[in-house]
Image (cartoon, rainbow, N blue to C red; front, side, top):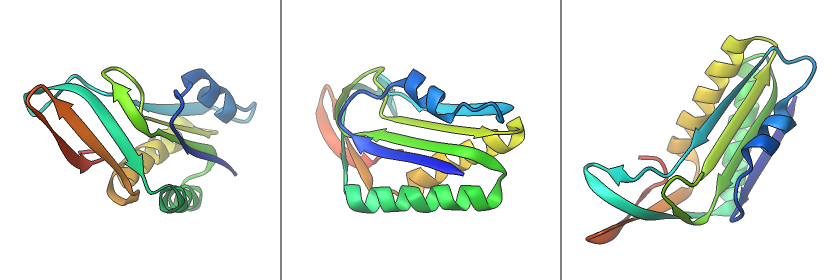
Length: 139
């Protein structure tokens, strides 16, 4: 049972995340990559700005990871989230889970992103052509 949790302003590296969760014991790896899309509710998105209350966010991500290890037979859990200003198509979040069997990896990965959206103190500001608005990190 290994966990890697990070919140920082640097670019997230998909391959490094996958490499970290890989192991000879793993029969499946599930990866969720969240990207900045170009529109929300019919409005053109120019960019996003993410902010986090880092100590609490890391603590909440750790809780999510611990629950995952209790509920599913997974081997490794990785949760990386980016802060700062991100352009369309950039990556604000990567979640990767390895397990002996794919079902556990799929279910755990889905649980992590869904729970992260609900409980982790990360916020985003959406910038549109006609204004900006603060919203929950994952609407």
